[in-house]
Length: 106
Image 1 (spheres, helix red, strand yellow):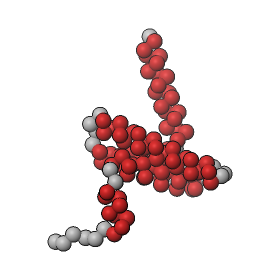
Image 2 (cartoon, one colour):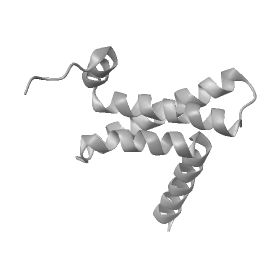
Image 3 (cartoon, one colour):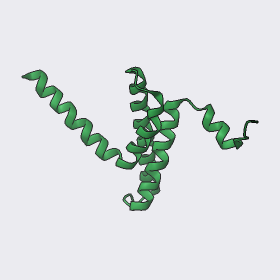
């Protein structure tokens, strides 16, 4: 069976490494969530939320790859980060970090 032509977007998507795909998906999902919820009044804050979500997804996916977790999980991580939002992910990270510090002090 001959290969199907993916088109420009398919070729670009396939050429991206997995962490970059996660970042792109995180940014797109965050943008759609912010537009749907109408949380942020200015376009600058909306774009900043998207960039931060994509960056967090990129970092988490790279960290998962470093720990040997399957690379295909990256797009799911990006979607989850984009959907939850930067504030929620930051609150979770802060709570986990504070728990670790308390455990080390004990």
